[in-house]
Image (cartoon, rainbow, N blue to C red; front, top):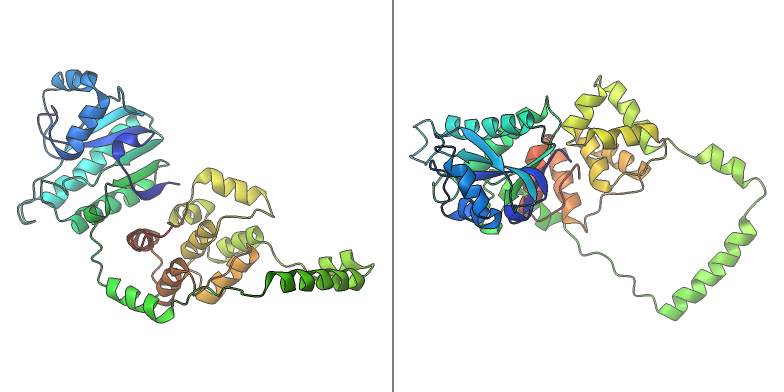
Length: 326
């Protein structure tokens, strides 16, 4: 998947490159910087000593040493001084320069921490918005798997204006999943009788009946909607946060059955109405249910006609739900 958000320790992420939120000396420090140096071993420090530091907003690259990655990209984030001293531009530069180095070294996957959001004091929500904005822009013209690694729940502050509205919407619409309490012996007897009845009801022309009743497949509806919306395949799968290889697999298989998160991601990309989305999900064998917080959140954004998948994924992440496009 091109972009995802996870809670983890960045030193454990297997990828081509991880990004280190370093200080200007590049010789290690606290937080993410110290953790990366400890996990990488002495070789990383020795190579960093030859780089003669790094300016704020810039980035330099080294080997990964004992880390599960080929490279470490070191970038120096800005210290927060109230937001009126070029902090945003410098933080954007950190992400852009790091991504440029990753691309230059032909990295197919890169993992970022939330740069400057620790001891440098950059407000976490604003730091998150900068990260997502630069990554989103980069992925419009580039294919790369990018992961934003959040260390723990306290490192992520969900502060969007509509957060309370979503919580209220969930509270109003969430219902406990129905539990079938039919006695087991009765259920078995009922199934046995049903099986006999169904067997007797099968007619010789069942094949013709299926052919007459079978509906448009998920793949067929997806491709039809792409044409109807005047989109290209690339525009559709990038907006859906879907990998090109996965889209090619779906396109080549008329009966492909996607994951529910993938099907919804395409519905978001195509800006389908709630009814159209339910129809697309049904063709993939799924439905939206008010016994699922994930489904209620998706329904909320569609009713509000908010089709930015990064915004939706941020919300899903904050509510500990699966992300779209996975």
